[in-house]
Image (cartoon, rainbow, N blue to C red; front, side, top):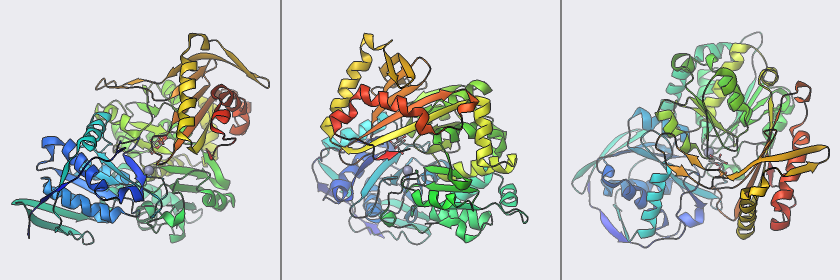
Amino acid sequence: MSFTSIIVQSSPFDGQKLGTSGLRKAVSVFQQKHYTENFVQSILSALGEQVTGSTLVVGGDGRYFMTEAVKIITRMAASNGVAKLVIGQNGVLSTPAVSCIIRKRSATGGIILTASHNPGGPKGDFGIKYNISNGGPAPESVTNRIFECTKAISEYKTCPDLLVDIGSIGVQEYQVDGRKFIVEIIDSVTDYVDYMKEIFNFGELKAYLTNQEKPFKVVADAMHGVVGPYATRIFCSELGLPSESCINCVPKDDFGGHHPDPNLTYAADLVALMKKGIHAFGAAFDGDGDRNMILGQNGFFVNPSDSIAVIAANAKCIPYFQKTGVKGLARSMPTSGALDRVAKGDGLQLFEVPTGWKFFGNLMDADKLSLCGEESFGTGSDHIREKDGLWAVLAWLSILASRKQTIKEIMKAHWTKYGRNFFTRYDYENVDSEAAQKMMTNLRQLVQEASFVGKCYTEGNKSYTVKLGDDFEYEDPIDKSISKKQGLRIIFEDGSRVIFRLSGTGSSGATIRLYVDSFEANQDRHNMMAADILKPLVTIALKISQLQELTGRQAPTVIT
Ligand code: G1P
Ligand code: ZN
């Protein structure tokens, strides 16, 4: 079939700036005439000459507006000279699957349609993100180029008559403006699952999980996100677990009206189920499948900062790392120092990068990094270039199968060996933007004053003396690019840290994130509640920042 492209006149929209992870806005914003088209054209234009003859992977988390976006992308890709699109069936691909497929097929890049853990549906959020040929989120050099294109756009190219069937697996061939244009619709799950079978020992896992005398009860909660079909395939078809092991595994375009974010607040139903004590292992995933939460029996919570530390300390339980070894470790700046202690103990290099997965990619490509994590429920490795929720669960299950201990026992042994970092994050969502900016500006000034160092803050019987205050800045060790203003840090003499950042993923107002990290070597205190240990530091942080006075918020929206 032959098609001819047309050029549509358009003009820039304000604010098509990519945040921590692509462009995220309310669905109604994306539905405006030309809005999505402008952004897609900007991605394609930013590719420059690379676009001609390119192969792009396209898929998303199944949220409302995704299929419309896939149609728009197919038509515009064809008109802009893309040679081939690889699309998940019905447009569905998890974020880790896109990364895996880009790498497997040596694609030029990929377009991911997701707003991750933000709510979906007509009144929810939508998002578009570009990943480069290594399978990872585009670095700032590329996202800046895309943003520049959005500001200068005056027209876009599309092929309005081209209607691709995204429901049927197989290869379709079209002629667009005299060029061949290929669309391959693939099964959403197979490539990813095949890869997991290379990384982990599915035979051993199955034997452990389905042991006749002592079956290991697992529950995986997909929160109605994209993970559903992947989880069912892995846990039920491959590992032989009963179907009730997978809950909320039928994807919905509004995630059942919930917030598909795997944390103690939004995955409260799973926490309640785990508290019944029936299951030894519980996990939840976010809308696009890159985040995970791990729970042990009776709802024992594994803090994500600890999760990556435990996986790193036990990497030898995973066949992939038996082959590759562990080249280095990395965490985002606000993530607790638990991983640093594993690096120190095991003689590995540790990198501290700004928030956002895009900062890990260069280190992995340079063979300097194997395992990394973020406190925001992101865990992953250099097997792909995105964080990977199901990979994290399979990593934990491999450790459990190998050590034959419970999650709680493993955590306790870990703290005894390395010490414990207590960590919490307070989120103040949808705060008035001006108030949030004012707080950050005041605080930036304060922490950078010479007299700030040495100041002592006392709360109850705890005193903390400031060792360092700054606005975190990162120089990428590989490409030497510099990222400034990545979060205000206050580091105290005892190593405790208080960090303030504004979220780069919200779609309205501002979200203030307050992170508190405190190390405790004393084993007698490891069983204490994180909230109790961290309370004095939280109070000090609120005092220093004047958060409550400036924003009018007495309590956070979410505490993790
Ligand atoms: C949040 C998390 C960050 C994560 C990102 C994408 O970004 O804090 O760690 O990489 O989502 O999942 P933020 O909203 O804080 O900018
Ligand atoms: Zn996500």
